[in-house]
Image 1 (cartoon, rainbow, N blue to C red):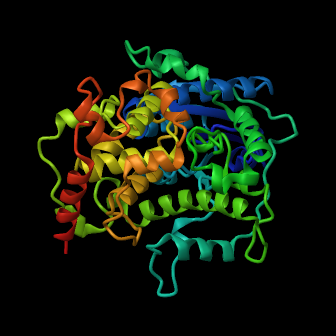
Image 2 (cartoon, rainbow, N blue to C red):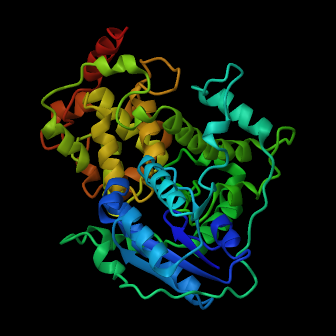
Image 3 (cartoon, one colour):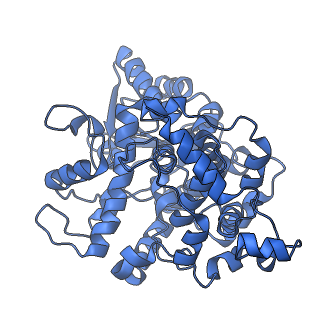
Length: 461
């Protein structure tokens, strides 16, 4: 009896149901990752692919230390997997579900294909804490607002065991297939951009847990306040590790005694709410799959966006808007593959509410450049800021980047770090620009553009 473990975005050894289940009642096990180029270009941005390469290398080394081979091969996800299953006569296949819509389709096809040849597919969910299909409101419909969703999840939550990698020796069945060089497959052709990431990030399961412990020791005790200060390392930075399944939300939440009656500190509660915002993002994507490229609130499909916005979009992408905190944030993204959550909201609001550029353009840019780019979180974040998502807040919520900077970066520590030409930016747009023409000019008037946005939003019925 032989079992096959098929990896995708579960690049870890611990808390891995597929691994632990694959050895029960089987004589030998094979560990496999199939790189389907077309599939991964659909589901991963350029920065994602850098992390994926590093994470796979880390997983391969960890398994090698346990005298187990991770086979990394190239081919069509379905065809190649079926070919290997039939060629080597595997009896069962084990996977951890991948909640990306494209992978959901592939896994369903794989399940049906295996059923036709009498092979079992065992699928486990550790991508989310809750199964989106099982959480419904009192009328049997999906929740559409975060707060009641979170309250219901907290009421239902029961702490689950965190699985350890099996302590017994696993008999590893080696398959004779052509392995791929991950450095070639996952590199970005003729682009040195991603080489900078090594200075800032260490992908892999072991490093995910180092980051978690560091966060618990240094930042959790005042998380609710410091998480909004972009110059301070006050967030967990676990998002890319979560995106690739190097660590699970189950592992993170097990650090808390979390249940309906437990009194968490305001900082602990706020952090857990962030985890459940991720849950809610996948929940909405599951029940309303159209949100991947269309507004959750369908009436905003009729919003009047600008038409000729190519030049302003490029200036926004490259950090050349003339708005200090916006340009600093976009520089941080291009340099590190990451952006602080507060400045993600500021830059997104500026793009959609001041430049009046469709949120899909910003979502696409973030998806390609963020190491932690996660389809559900990314889409939900952009729709929330642009005012067309699940949030019930009024449409006139528009971030003023100048006021945001004064509130969250009052000493300009963040903007000075990410702007080489900080001194050329103005403090007072109207007064300074009248007296000094050498200063960097904003590409748009914030007040006028805000009024135009409000006028257009008010027309949506």
